[in-house]
Length: 454
Image 1: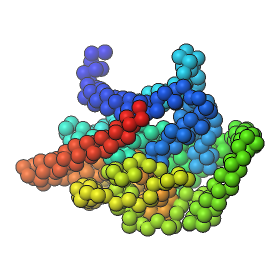
Image 2 (image 1 turned 180 degrees about the horizontal axis):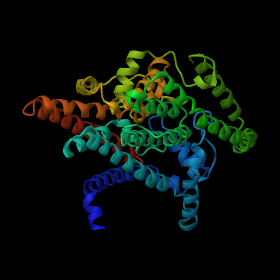
Image 3 (image 1 turned 180 degrees about the vertical axis):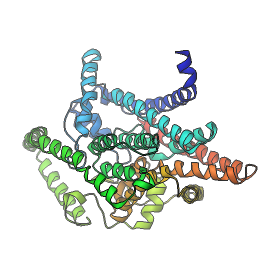
Image 4 (image 1 turned 90 degrees about the horizontal axis):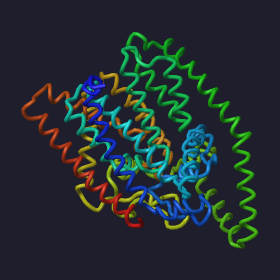
């Protein structure tokens, strides 16, 4: 045991640091509306919907863990409700013991473990694959989690942290072998990841192709390997069909029954349903095309402000105005585009983007860089090209933001090789200042919001 601890001492210490950070962050989260959520005076859906408003994240996970229900949209998250069943079962056992709803504690523990694992995997990528020193790898890990909606993903009861973990896990596994991802692992990761969010399956495929050696990157090899992804696709299709015929039908029937009871009791409820229907019809008119798959696209949002204020803006640095409000609310929605009041925020954003671009230039021949970059480009195609989820695109930041510290890691390596005396220390100072500033700014605003109603 002593030899084992000595061998992995560095990893254990880094993991312990991550555990402390994410435990404290999730402690903040469980303080938020703790009383009404642990001792609800109404149904789980109603109580979480009433009090939960966090930047556009959903409270579906809290509801599902409180009492298991298939609330997630199957065509986008075909297996996510099933993944939440073990947490719901654990929560049921805790409810019997403590006689309160322990969903927020159950999710907080699970999210702390997942976030700590993600933090450790990212550190090992930067340390072992890129080849950074301990201090540089730790600094970039803290830099990554200083981004506002990466920090929020570690505590918000939504699927973003699961996606981030699975994508970074894929990078970690693929870089352990010169040949890239073994086929069975690639197909398994595709099935599991696409079960969380369907687009993750495409990202795993892109990572798999990018992990191939140059000798194997021929058109025929790519086509043959790509065709094998029909296996997890077929399995997901089967799971989708089974759930639509079982749990989905039961959930729909239950919702219709509850709606009819509500209409009988509340004469104004039918009018609100009609108003919601009109609002949804107006939103559909802004879609890229009239299809259910494109219902979250919005052609009314301009692409340049979307990039500057939301993707590389709100996703990394919180706006103080309309702090953590939801742009999809029926009443008093957050404006889709908000501009910063202070010039330093644009300077910080521009510096991050510049470091990212320089890092990409330094790492164009690195396999890890391409494995991280291709999913990022796919996300940019969705969010900027198609304007998918444009109204609250920043909540997806955890899906792609890890590409930034990976690119900057290669920039650090390159500057160290060119000149150790000036460029490398200056670069570390810039990243340290950015990291400290973003942690202070984002965490103080998030903590203030969560503790305000504790």
